[in-house]
Length: 423
Image (cartoon, rainbow, N blue to C red):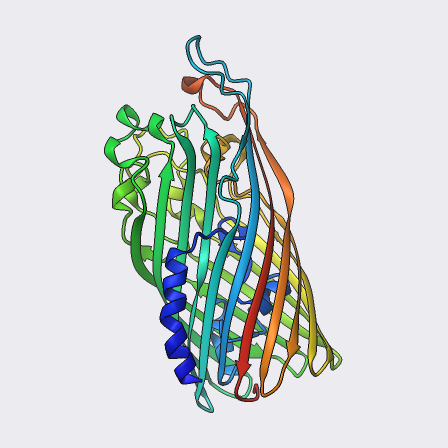
């Protein structure tokens, strides 16, 4: 088992860094981590499912035992933007119409987890996963933004070494170090260069820019009785080096830290077969200036108070059920509801980041094989949602309205190998 993890680890890291990534999202964060968790609405703070537990609540790793997991996500978002009522002067192109943001249609993302029951009261592990991401790739130029086809690509990969400790028979604590690697690229934003930016050469079409950094996640899981468990987790802000190739676009000269978030959850057993799960999460998008600053800022792009996407904090509610049909088959289902992270007045710049989905339907299953091996599946559908930004386009750009819409489909499959019984 250790040999497998050592051989597969560098392959997964390399894959995460080179595969185009976008996600079924709460804002631009994943709805959950690990195929089992994704099958149950993304809920998992109080009930870990596999060795990716450190991505949600590191305390849960103590309940996993010796385990190895590897999975693949196939994702297809459908995103579009519509401009209406724009009145640029004669001589400028007519920009009114609907824009297809799906030049890149399909995305793939691997994940890996490994856990080791080092002592009866101590577990070690590592989780490697996409923490979040977002992609738009318009098929034609949006001339209010620039002269070439517009779009952005944001990818965040976390490598999270994890330690979990069993304090007593009913309380577990954990900590994970989040080593972050992120990538950003944009195209088609030439109109925001020159006077709109403090660094016009570093606004648009500069290829991939990378940042690295770190943060921490801590968690607690408690068993109130044989039927009810509760948990809580907090992930600090993840400080990441600046996107130097886009220092004239993002606030703080290219800053793009990963926002902090926290969550609480409960797990309730209904008899011997069914378990209900509930999580409530808050993501602090409003704490990162490059994400939170409104477009209406009078400061140039790239400055500390320069324009951003106008995102605010959101709450996410997650509910799911596990049902053990028999020792070899578990079925899952769930629902995830999150808020749109920006107001309709911010729709113009969010043509690049149309994270407007709110409601996600989840389903999944695990099929047991021999010798502790298993195959898990998950499917998520994010229902279509539209945000209508009345008068969202600034007068300097001819005014008018912007409508953003998106729906998503995601399929995950994972192989797991449990070499020990769960505690």
